[in-house]
Length: 404
Image 1 (cartoon, rainbow, N blue to C red):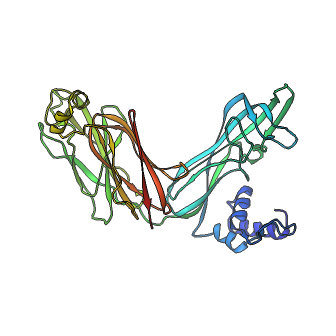
Image 2: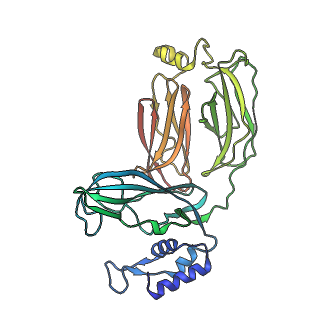
């Protein structure tokens, strides 16, 4: 990094973008360098610097954005068994350390997948015990969000009580800026505007019927609408995704406020290509917590107390189920259907083959019935993805294939 042609390129980058930090320069120079040598060469290392590519990365239409990272002491004077020496000169064995987590998360909108890193020039360790002292960084970076995490150990003593007082794998404190840490995101922000927000969400039925929800929206191709519902003071959960501008909630029955068992709040937003509008206005509907076919008790009570024949008569699922996505393979979006015989807290998420969560489709209370969630791939790369549902004690996983 101290060679004249490297420092010269770094100077050009700083002249083009004065917002760069030292660790940004190192990350970008390393990631734009061209590897053409199969092994280490004492004169040129593994390849050659690409000054043009490095300058392109830090100038328009690319941007360099910084945000605040978190640096938290997760464990104090805790025992870790290192199967390899945690530092040069330290043998494998048990050491007592304060373990710090350096992490950052962010949401944004970029064309393609941006580059992202924490304010250090290399990775830390994992928090595994035993620990093999290999460099580790949990990384999940997409066109719309990123999550980065690594750990640093301040080793106090060894198992014999001898004082060490050293950072491992290196001291991260010089990388603080004004007393805190940062993260960096480098890429081209999207110039595509999110879809317009739906307006005038309203309920058009009278008491004693199913609530039919209607909203206004501009005619835009490939837009879907995500309707969210919250019961009483509970948080919002995704209820349904539809290309239409209306939805009938068949899980509850309208009632006058004086006879209502609960108040349900609704809001809706538009989605297209991984971009989302702001939410519409919020409305409140007063209802009985029952199916429209029988209002003698709550939907969850009815669902748990009926046999299979009665559930079938009420058009309720008789068991938990997660169905194959449709279509599969898919190129842009696919629908995932699932069934709940009773109300449950549902978590439905999509993972890549590394086990990293790339989308969370549902996370909240969902009523008994038949449900559909839409997975929009956005700028995710082609490949095999897994989607998993957890509802109460029920868990199931399926595979789907994204092709672009």
